[in-house]
Length: 599
Image (cartoon, rainbow, N blue to C red; front, side, top):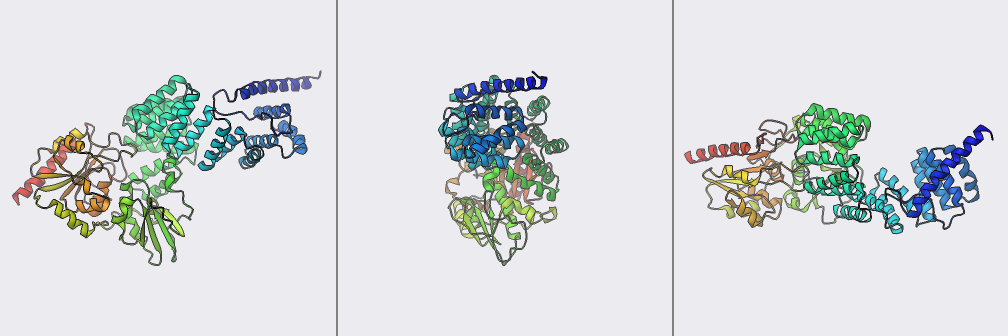
C-alpha cells in the first residue's frame, strides 16, 4: 500500500476512534463535564446516515475543513433540507468564523427538528456572544425541554439570568445543576457569584472555595475569591490573590480589571491606569476597563475623557437594564421641536447629583420628559426645564423622538470643571410641605442635626463604607444638639439600640419631597455617602459627609471640599477607622454649640 494512502487510512481510523468515543458520550446524554448534549442526531427525520454524519463531525473537530466540505457536498446535493445537513453546515460555518451563516443553518436545523437540543445550544451560544440575552434564554429553555437532566444547560441558563441581574432565577438554575451533578465546580462557582451580588460575601467565599475543592485548577473560582475580598475591603489580600491568578493564568481581562479596581480603591491611580490599559490591549471592547479608566479620569478632573469612557457602562451587565430603549440616543444636538426622554439611572444619589444638568438642556422649542422612580416624582415635578416628570413604575408610555440616560448628560452637554457646581441650590423643598414639617419640629430650640447613618445596602462595595453604629457614641457628649433620624427603613429596635437619642420622624416620610421638607427645617445634616447627602448638597444645606476614604470622583481623593457641592464638608475616614472622623465631627459640633450659647 502506498505510504500516503496508508497515512490517510490511519488518519481516518484515528478520527473514527475519536468519533466513537464521542458517540459513547452522546448515548449517555451529555458531555463528560455535564455541560451540553453533543451534536449528533439520534435518528428521526434525517436522510443522512449516522456514519456519514459522524465522519463529517470528526473532520470538523479535527480542523480538516476542506475534507469536511468535500464530504458534505454530495449530502447537500442529495438532501438539501435535511436537519443533519443544516447542523453540519452550521458547525462548518462556525469553524470558518462565519457566525451569521452558522446561526442561519442552526435556525434551519431547529425548524426542521424542533426537539434538537444541541442545535438550540449552538444558537444560544451565538446569541450570548451577540448580547441578545432574551433569544439566548429562549434557546436554552427550548434545549431544556428536550434534555431537562443536563446540568450544563441549567448552568448556562443561570448565567443568562445572572447577567440580567435576575438573581432568584439564576440561583434556581445553579442549584438545579448541582442537584443533577453535585461535583459540578463551575455551577458551584456561579452560585457563589449570585451570593456575591447579594452582598452575602461569607457565603459567596464558601461557594468559591468549595468550587476550588472540587476542581483545584478552577481559575474562575480563584479570581472570584480575589474580587470578593476586594469588595469586602480586604484590598491587600485581594491584590495578592489576583496577582497570583494573573501569574497562573495571564491574559484574562477579568483578573486584570480586578487588579485595576483594587488599586483604584487603594488610591494607587498610576497602577490602576496601567492595569486597565493592559486589559484594553487584550480586548479593546472591554467595558470594565473603559469604565475603570473613566473613573480615574473623572477623579483627576479630566471630565471630557471621563464622560467618554463612562458611556461604556451601557455595555456592563449590571447596568444594562437602564439602556434597553428603542429611541435614538440624543448627543446634544438641536432638538428642533422634538421630544426628548431623559431616563433616570443607577441610585438615588446619582439621580439627585445629575439632576442639575436637566435645566441645561435649555431648548425652549423642545419637550423634555424625565422618567424616574416614584420617590422622586413629587420633588422634581416643577423642576426648571422639564415639561413633564413620569413615574417609571407606572407603565406609562412616552412617545419620544430621542432619549438619553441621565448620567450621559455630562458628555452630551460638554460639562467641564468650569461648569461646576452650577447654580446652588438647584433643588428646593415644596413650600407647603416645609410648613407642615415645621409644625412637627415646633418648640425644639436646640441645634437640629439630621443624621443619615447607614448607606444603601444594595450598593456595590458597601462593606466598610459606613461607620459601625457603636462608633456614633463619639457625638453623645456634645450638649445642646437634637439628632433627627434621616435613615429610612430602620425599625424601632434600631432606634432604641442607637448610641445617641434619635428623634424619629421617618414614619411620616413618603418620598424625597418629604425628606427635603424635613431637611429644610434642620440646621445641619450629618450623613454617610448616600442619597441624603446628595439631596442636602443640591438644596445648598450645610452638610457634613462621613467619607470612607476610598477614592470617588464625586468627592475626590483628599481634602474637605467637593467641586460638586459647595455646602458639603467632608470628614474622611483614616487608616485607624471611623472614630477619628467622628471625633472631628464632635469637635466641630462643639464649636457650633458654643457659638450658639454665646449668642
